[in-house]
Image 1 (cartoon, rainbow, N blue to C red):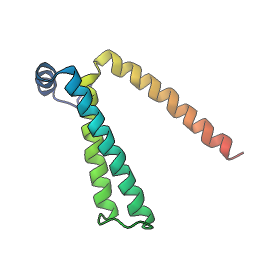
Image 2 (image 1 turned 30 degrees about the horizontal axis):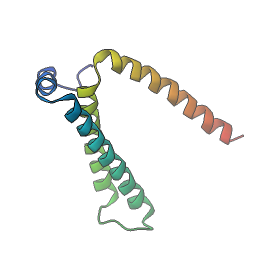
Image 3 (image 1 turned 180 degrees about the horizontal axis):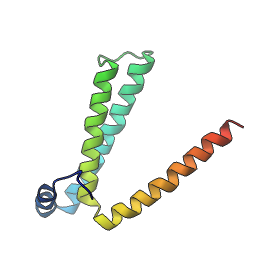
Image 4 (image 1 turned 90 degrees about the vertical axis):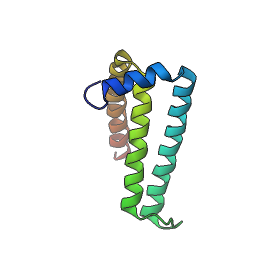
Length: 104
């Protein structure tokens, strides 16, 4: 998992949080990340004004992304992270190819 999380903190959380609660936390954090992304769009477009300026919206997005990463560390073990990394690489390549084909 690298250095993104403190192993002792992670171990404590995994030992003291039920699987159900860990997945609930992940779902909540993912929803908050989606909401933060929508706020960034609103701050950029300004067609539906938000009290948050762009930089505040980006800060919130970063906070929520960190929360999602932390929740993922709790529910996915090291082996699964390797699989997720490999899937992400494949999907990034596919995304690039779709964008390239759009330009044709």
